[in-house]
Amino acid sequence: MDTKYWNIDRLGRLYKDWDPEVLKRLANKIAKSHWRPGYHITTKTGLLNDPNGFSYFNNQWHLFYQAFPYGAVHGLKSWQHMVSDDLVHWKFIDKPMVPDLYSDRNGCYSGSAINVDDKLFLMYTGNTFEGEEMARHPYQLGAWMDADNNISKLDHPLIESEPAGVTGHFRDPQVVKHGDYYYAFLGAQTVDNAGEILTYRTKNIENGWELYKKLDLGTDNLGYMAECPNVGFVDGKVVVIFCPQGADKHEFHYDNVHPNAYIVADDLDFEEMKLINPSEMKQLDEGFDYYATQVLNAPDGRLLSVGWIGLPDTEYLSDQEGWEGELSMVRELHIENGDLTQRPVQEFKQLIEEDEASDTDLQKHIEAAPFYEHFNLNLESEDSYLRLSYDESDQEWTLERKNVGEDVSIRTFKSEASSIDFYLDNTVFEIYILGGKITMTGQFFHEGNEVRVNSENMSVKQNKISSM
Image 1: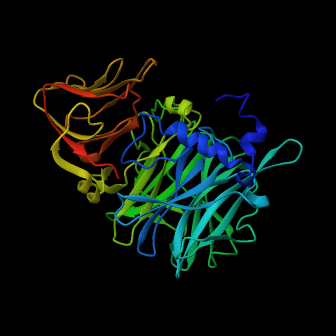
Image 2 (image 1 turned 180 degrees about the vertical axis):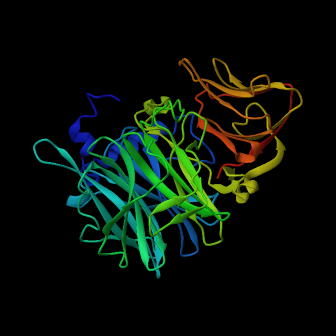
């Protein structure tokens, strides 16, 4: 980040105070980019991060994302809005939720959405910094969206402050209905620098939110902050997905700056707010860039998810072009033999063409099946490459990435050999192994002219993918 340009004034400037020419110049610069994806959601300009408000309302799928449109930096955050009829083709709705209250003047941060009667209720964290020491003060806020996608914020906070014993790091409400109550799961940090997930509840979604209980996950290895908690129900089980920043690596191995994790349980006891027979905490994704996953228990019975292809506290090569971040394909989640599986939704198949892809097709689906115990799949472009390999002797997978002008990064994990579903979208990749039991997601910045696919001891089929 250019700290000379991105001073406190620009990072916190209200959207109404920006010169419209800034967005025009940024859009013209981005139009020359050769790194933009074709079928993944990305921002028109500036930064995209956490998915928010994933919901089905008024006969459409709705998906918001945290954004700062004026540069590829974490400036003043808003909610940008996308809608879809099929979870694949997404349309931008130019009616963002922007900071315009005292309680969200330093940003509209992450949250969720739920149908209530004939409207969609949004619950989110308003970030503020108060006093001479600029102490973080979070407000949990609410808003209504009507059938025309007009958003009206409530004139009062739902939760005015963090509870006793919790710091200002108190955010990311996921609201669900169970019985007579609405429950909100919130990420929190204690004054003892420990992460936890707290629950609040009320019978009236606009008022009366009260601290209920801490969610008992069966583990206390939540680092110093448990971000983006989400609870979903599928296949007679419950899954909790969250981001335990600073989790102890001796107990839970991860290589990214912050991990995305999950726990599967037989059930959730809402009275005790406790997981019944929880699994150990496991990595949600083994790749380089995947975070802040949000789930939706959809009206059709499916459990769906979407994540940010990016990480906090990380800079990317696209920043120099004035944009950063994508959202993953929408995934359908299941529990199989106690493990979470993730696969692209069935609707995505409509984008896969019958035509065979060439090296110059940067949107492609690669199906690869091994026929020896040692195999590899390589995507190469001049001085950059992405290499996935497997060694049967220790059942270890290795993913190596070399972006343009950068050193090699490596991720490894252990499992049995399997066929591979590989989705490439120019500089974005999603890899599904063992039927989605293992996923690897990230960004791959190459020279932009072609990506050659080579393999050893594998059969490979490539098909084009249409842009959305």
